[in-house]
Image (cartoon, rainbow, N blue to C red; front, side, top):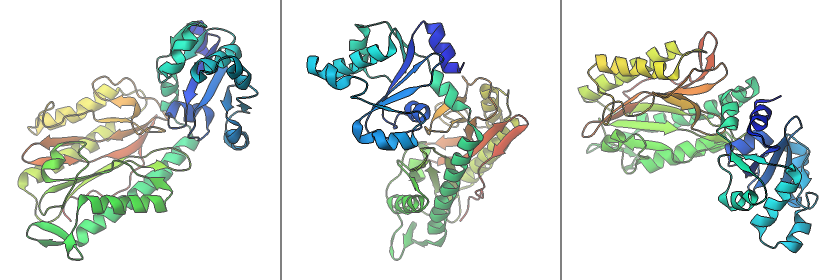
Length: 375
């Protein structure tokens, strides 16, 4: 039995049910089907899962999905709608009949379905079973992530070249006589990603004071002598898998405080990477960075090192496992970021991020982008 079968049986449910489009990473993982409209996934213990799709999606689902699909008509929805015009209630009735008993549902299950289903059977909300399954990647999944990482590095190279070749006028970077802005660099990054079959969203190109806020996306002209944090986390348009990488650059001479922060962040990342292997605790790996920063005089908390050391990456850019105070043992095949950072208002921020696979004998680093601060 699969883990999902075991959890479903232990819950006393007849079937596990998910509902959503492939934008829901659990649904993309379970169905291996990319769609913008929601589908129903239903799996009875010991049986193959099945999906219910619209007639418009049926032919493509036959070719692409992990299971032989059924249409909504075949599942009885159209007949039910003749008696119950409310689509949520009708869909709930269809699911209840297909399952033939109580249900275990995903944590992202819509309230519009949960309420009418609860009047038909007992509905139990699952506790991240599928997300835990997603955390451990097959070699095929790792290959997908590796491909996206190559696109990420190509787009970072594009950004680096723009900054490196920029002229400086009155403290601001310029390209072809115009200010080189965060928006311009992000557009160039996204164009490169598209050329590699990937899309980027909420890409971070933050400079100066903005860089002191870890997830400030950045705006306006890039400045000489100030840290420029570039964080790229694109998704493959084909497979749905993500990658994630951050580099920090300075055009011109950096303030000594930024240089010291950069050295500490670089060393913290290297030290943490050495500790990653199957069985290592996510909390313990995080603490390696905390301890190194403390030795260099940098706090962990509201300023300084303000976030977890890393997170899982797969069909979501942030998923299990966690490299942080709550992180448990790492498992072979998990893909995690290692992204220490230091942030101080009035000074700026520095973050470096690599992506690696947890192996039994250590970390396989998927990131091959040069580390250099001064451009």
